[in-house]
Image (cartoon, rainbow, N blue to C red):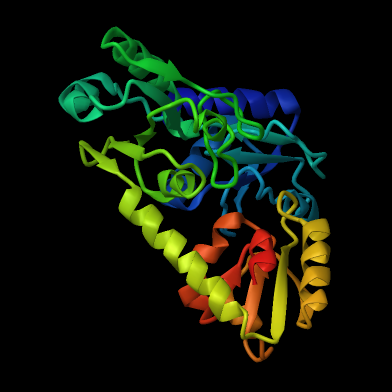
Length: 317
């Protein structure tokens, strides 16, 4: 965060009347956390205290407000994610400080335009960091004869924004478009989208200066998913995972999955934890897991050395 952003954040903290604050940042911003906390303290003035949460932070569903209250903090500053449209009541007030990265997609789109020739109708998506890229990309593509769609998400805060658990800005357009175009960096979000739609998902990568199709990754994940279901058919003892994180406590889904497993003659146990990690399951003699937390956990099955199903996979067994 630059000095202007820090000053703006400090002003919001002062307005909230807080002198003791818990700072929460995602993993990618951890290298900046110490400097960020120091600058905020200086901006708030003498007597201010900024503590840093070192727990992993995966999104706006992962708010450490209970820690903030336990430490006597009057405010939680959550950096890097947008507030969800479906807000919950928190134990202390929360400031969501967005972290924007400004990039002009037009030069890269111009280079890759020939690769988009088969796509007459395109749905644009991105993450919170790059939402400012959507409008210039839309204007450029429309000027080159493309029909552009930018959807309204259910959970995420901005049109065209996707989350690891929310692709509603894109899914309704699957029958209307020739492809989906993800603007940004990384593969986590576009691969997640690719497993939920039938049309090609292309990535305009701002770091690599490339346009890439996710079809190979999608096909691999779908094959792995089918293999996980087949292996789980042989399992007897199932752990049904529930997270205690405030935005991931899908207990109702877990209870239904447990009943469906028991109806199939399986032993099923609801397992509750904060952060989900394989070492927490050691010695429990489980043979398969059903994930009722972040839907992307099933991609980490190798770490757990057993099949991990999503709730909807139980009926496929």
